[in-house]
Image (cartoon, rainbow, N blue to C red; front, side, top):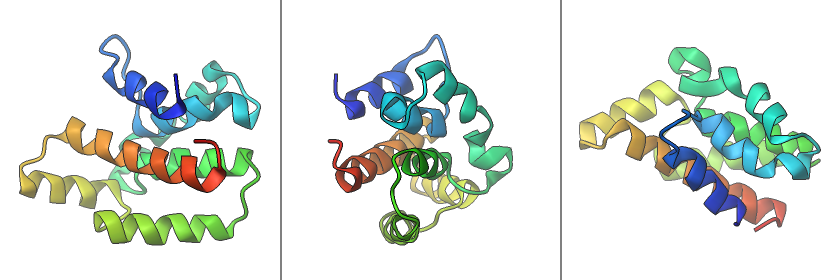
Length: 128
C-alpha cells in the first residue's frame, strides 16, 4: 500500500476517527522514525484546526512530517503559499466555511485537504 493509499484508508475507517493531521503523518511514521501509534498520539490535538478552527490539520500533519524528514524550513513557506493558492486559505474555519458555501460536505472537504497535502508532501519529499 502506498502512503497515499494508507492515508485514504485511515480517512475511510469508520471504526476510528483519524483527524486530518493524523491522516497525513501516520503514513510517514516509519520515515520519520516513530511508530504509527506514536504518530497518532503526536497529532491527536491538531484536528479541527488545533481545536479552534486555526491552521488546517492536514497542513499541521505535513509540518510534523516535514520536520521528521529533515526538510528545510523554506519548504514550510512553499507549502503554505501553494496550499493557499490551491485552496483559498490555510485556516480550518475559513476552509470549512467556503466548502459549506459550495455545498461540499465536511468529510469530503477534509478528505480533499488531506489528499492535497499527501500529494504535496510525497512529491516534495521524494517519497511517492
